[in-house]
Length: 328
Image 1: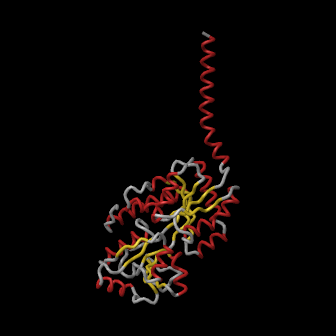
Image 2: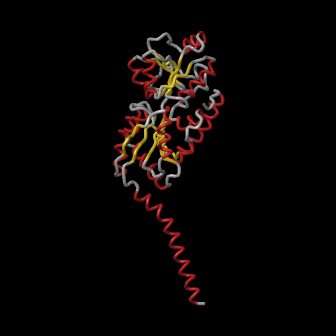
Image 3: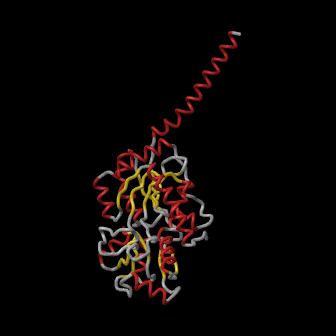
C-alpha cells in the first residue's frame, strides 16, 4: 500500500511539472521575442500616409526591439490584399499591419473578402487626419454650393475618386450623395495619391481624402478644399468651412491609422509591441514629423485602441445602412 501511495505521489508530481511547463513555455517565447526581422505591411501604394507613418517609426522600433523593422508594400484591392496577407499569416508578432478605416469598412462593402475586423488585434492608435473635399483649383467650382448645383444639373455625369470600395472616402462620399441628393459616379483608384493625381489631370471631378495627402497640393494652389468633413474648423485650413457649417452634419470623417497584429497573437507579445510603439511615438522628432504629415498624434495603446475600434465599427455599420451601401 505504501508503494502504491509513492507511485501516486510520483505521478501527481510529474503531472504538476508538465502543467507548469505548459505555462512557462508561452512566457519564455514572449521574453525572447523578437529573434528576427519584424515586417510592417503597408496595404497602400508607396507615398501613401500609411507608408509615410510606417517608415517614420521603423528605425526607432528597430532600436527599441533590437531587430530590423522593415516596411513592405502589399498593395491592391483598395488595401484588401495587404490586409488579408496579414490575416493569413502566423500570429507570432513578426508581421504588423498599418491600416486606416478600410480594415473595418471593406468587410461591410464587399462579399467574400476573406477578413473581418475581429481577425486583428490593435497595438496602437497612431492618430487621425481631417478629411477634406477637394476639386481642381482652376476648375469651375469654387464653393460647395456650386459643385452641388452643377451635379444636380448633370445627374450621373460627375465623378468622385476613392482609394477603393470600402474605404472611408467611399463611405463618406456615398453619405454625402444621400445628404445632398446628388448623383456622382464612383471611380476606385487604389490609393489617395492616385485620387489627387486624377483630379489634377481632370480625369475625375472630386473626392474626400485625408489632409495628409491633400496638404501639399492645397499649399501649392493646385487643389482647392471646398469643405472639411468635421464639426470644427481646423488650424491647417482656418478659412475652409466645415460640413456642419454647410448644413450636412452627418458628413463627418477623420480617417485614423492603427498598427495591428493578427488576432490570437500571444498577449505578452501584444503587450510588448504596444509599449514599444507607444515609446516610439513619444519621440518628439517623430511626433513632429507625423504632425507635419497632417496626422494628429493620439498614441493610444492596445486597450484604448480596441475600445475606439468597437465604437468606430458600430458607427460605420450605421453609415452603411444610412447611405445604403450594400455588399458587392
